[in-house]
Length: 406
Image 1 (cartoon, rainbow, N blue to C red):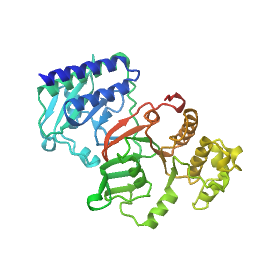
Image 2: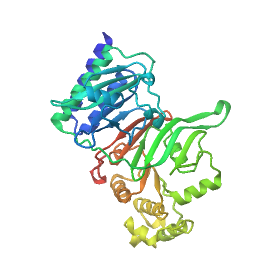
Image 3: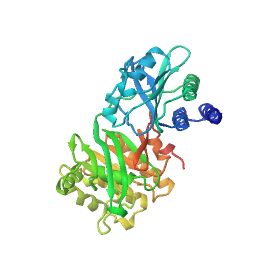
Image 4: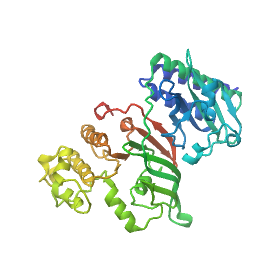
């Protein structure tokens, strides 16, 4: 009885969100998260069927540690594809031994799919996708009440998509530039040992803007430091552009940082005795094929400040110099650690607008932030919790910096 009452409350809240939320995408993410929590599952995915395009099925929203970016199914392929083809709810007790299971997903993501409820999304005329709820945390099997709440979510989702419209934004797959598999990081020994990362699986793609959210101590900055070659993982694998840097020596990591990675820090880290132009030239001299310092300053709108010292510039201007310092290396990826945390709202928008131009220029940008509003700009949002990737959210319609409010 208690379970049915809880489920009734969940469905009531999902109904309200889908009807009232300004963003249908945000409402769907929230609804999926509520159902995953209510049934005690590890993960969940909403798939949409691109019936008028390539005929494939794409994951649009997912909760859980598996990163499904760039993955898709053919119509009738796998459990999700079979459900879309048949239009019938399917409960699978043992996915690994089910002939329909597309096992490459687990191989790709490092996630192990054990059991599943898969429910079709049916609008007035056709199947438009499906919803998967995956793995009971306590190891038990799904019951009729679990299936019922999933079917209710599917029905409400289909109605909301029909009535409000949803630009599904089937995205073109981009090549993977960074791949992390089962990455752990432990500091200290014995009683003082602390495990910060507990098995991170994540792919980062060429030219995307990815934001990592999470509470203090969840492992965000540690992950950023490993990706930037400033720290080494304890176990697992870290590859950049197909090359394994998991246990690279310091010289190799130094060359990796110098050639491939640009850094933007919260504290700017400019040399106080050098002008803006000299700060950039100092970095440029360490790199091959670096950008001209004046050109880099022009890209961030600071040509007139090239002869100013950091103390002669505002916080926003100093941060724009640090962005130019990252750009002068012509890096493959820029890592930004809380770049607006020390700035007021107007200055933050100014800095984010500059970063926006960098992203549009094709540079991959990975940002760690506490500011949930900034995540609206991202192509994908990674939420970390307890040293693992807890959620991966695809944003089909990123906001522009000037639309953000906090």
